[in-house]
Amino acid sequence: GRTGTPDLDEFVRRYNSNTTDISSTVDTDRYQPSNAYTNDKKLVIGWSGSLTTSRFFMVLQNVLKRIAAKYDLEVLVMGDPSVKIDGVPLKAIPWTEKDEMPTLQKFDIGVYPLADEEWVYGKSGLKAIQYMALGIPTVATAIGANYRVIEDGISGFLVRSDDEWVHALIKLIEDASLR
Image (cartoon, rainbow, N blue to C red; front, side, top):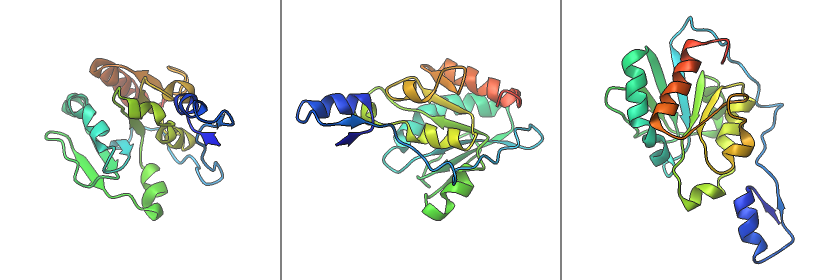
């Protein structure tokens, strides 16, 4: 069998030793970067997920309030159209296969927040992989498979606290060449 994370592989090996841990992948012929990496327009911080994972996005409420108080930007959420955060200019839309790629390509910065709970250790980091395949600078919670997807400070940022989220986002907002 195939597993998508080291933690899942370890769990499955208790019952079947014939497993292989293979990270999630994306079709790089389809995932083409379109980011201009400029600060001459309103920047978009984006998150893609689902109704069941939007609770992870909401971990960023205070972070995004702090950022929105200082910068003129938009937050774009794809997957849970009911998401709202007071004081944050946020557009939330449903996920559709047809709209996924063009919506992701609007992101200037991708966020991938997660909570420290058992279920998260089975997540493969696919959202970070999708963002990165599109050339979207990514800030993610330093947890689980994100350590094998992102090299902190090299291919993205791995963060542990609200202050680290704010610091990483500000660096990317202010420095178009870093993005």
